[in-house]
Length: 424
Image (cartoon, rainbow, N blue to C red; front, side, top):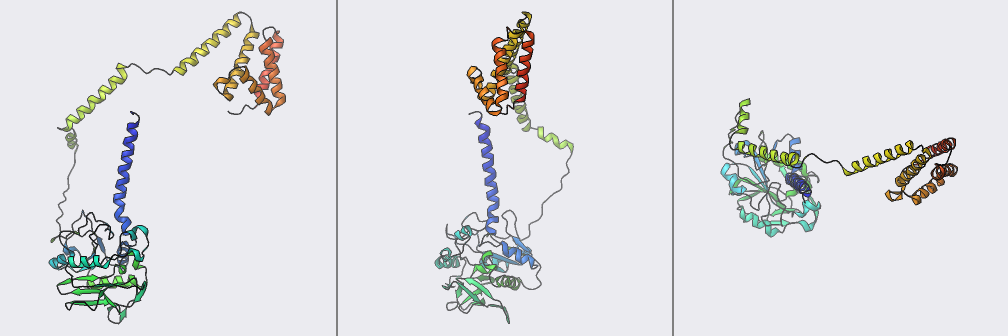
């Protein structure tokens, strides 16, 4: 269990890192999905129109921006795709229409159309469309209860709306979503539309607010169709007025704006070596003292209480074995029996080779016999000479003359050296 603690701590760190990466990349993933608006941001910037994105950590003032674009979302869980920075189901303390009137800020509100599974699956199909009843509820919430919505049943359709006189733009929409012209209130005006419905309207109760019925004219999924990208640029240029240089505000969080530009309260500080003293002031001094005390106790427990580290038992065994062999050899040399010593040397050497090939339990006569059989399969003649010289030294080494002893020992040495033992 003690050894598992570091692994558990490492796993916890990895999980937290993965969670942080997921949280940071969630908004970026949605921006690049079919329902996101990253393509609109890049396209407007390429056409010389600066774009600011909403950030929950940065407050924006009305005076900083020329046009606010608000993609509306359904407030029911699981119905509409969440916005990139959305944390709750609410769009904020105020709805964007009321805020636009309060700050006299041109605001483009984009109606929702697709469910959240479209951004996950990457496929915009009829099953991914939001029910019109839910969208009408959102219209009621922001103060447009008189507007009606229709949706075409014909799949992909083309239209040629006019944003400028005598300059029609060819657009393409899948199940085009438009405001109903027949029920369009008298205080609302169509600014662009198709033959069967209005795409862009403005009403007198909120004169600074423009409603776009179909989000496919501005999202990643729709910008690649027909001349929808040209329509998007013309629409933004029309609503932010000619000659405007302030950026467009792409608001995906729905947070209210500030009435005034936030004052930069940043200060410049000078650091010196004396600031290091603050790391040892109370209560940090208590923490440092505790760490030093714990380190001292650990050092005493490991170095003094239990003594110096012990050597490995295997090293002691090897040293004892070497000493025993040296003592035996010295006794044999003192007795003048070199032949017996040579026979034991050859036997031990063959036993070591057998253990090298067949494991610790092979250091016996059966293991040595298996070793000779293995060597014979590689080089039968040399293995036969090795076997005969080794057998002679082991069995008759103690009765051989010095000349025979040296001759057999030389044959054994050359035969063993000429055979490729390989690896286990």
